[in-house]
Length: 273
Picture 1 (cartoon, rainbow, N blue to C red):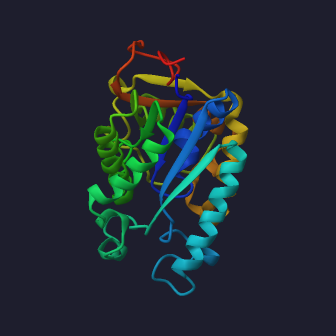
Picture 2: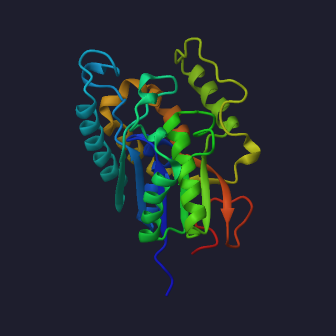
């Protein structure tokens, strides 16, 4: 008997699920495909009450984690997901933060230990399609938890041999350039920020682009559910036209394919239906 079509998406923190994969999670759920979101950390190093940063007065790790996980569940409800799995690791913070050295930080957990927990979930759900970040944490982002999420997912995919297709999220450089041009046209103040030429995913590595335009409102609602982190989510401050452009398609790099599927595809389940 064919096993149920299943998508498993592995992310580092609460709120990561929205931008790069919120559309596919909503779309494939609506299509009757089982969707599983795995969130690796509890987000302790996010903003606390009043925007308090880690180490500042008013920042309480436990309270931040509790709030962010509640926001995550609200986000999942907007996207309509079937299953949310929490690995429960401690947020490692951005590269160079004091939190990097905490012995319980996700980035410091032996890969084989965390990969074992993820492999058990793969054994349980048996996903044909798995999605996570590339080796840089997603288009060169470099966050320690994103890099660790990549490592454990790659290890679990290899050790279980269960997925038929494995993807990295992609931020195509051409799309980034177009988005920033659109923001400037709308008078958005970007300050001194200018994306470097190597920011994002080289266009030639992008194999899959999925149209999720009908789900942009759900993505936006899911993103807004993470209210405590709103100040650091710059896409919420973009003009509506730029938001629609940024949210309407999600891109991926296919790194494993055991089935007959086109080299460039518009459906992560191509060859599996």
